[in-house]
Image 1 (cartoon, rainbow, N blue to C red):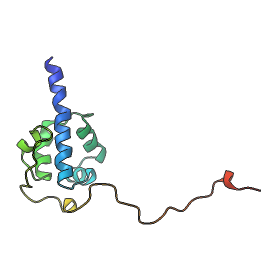
Image 2 (tube, helix red, strand yellow):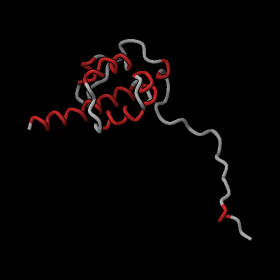
Image 3 (cartoon, one colour):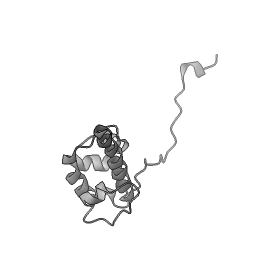
Image 4 (spheres, rainbow, N blue to C red):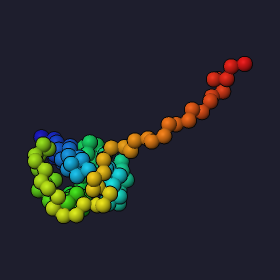
Length: 115
């Protein structure tokens, strides 16, 4: 029973991490760069697929300009204002994927050619 409780906290912390990161307009890539990890690691932490070691919490809190208590609060709790400087790439940046500004050229395929 105790093991299930430990596992239940991982997705909760991950969801809270995602809430704060998105609220701060910080992409997974920017946070990953700040922490020195791969972008997929952030996604795995946020989705609860990989256990987030407590040793990462202070670094994550610094990168997102929040406290450890903010990170450990239940998902859906109010997100306080930033408590320090955010990474420059987070300020005013849409965390979504950049929109394509030009159309892709269609590459003809061999079966497209009619004799």
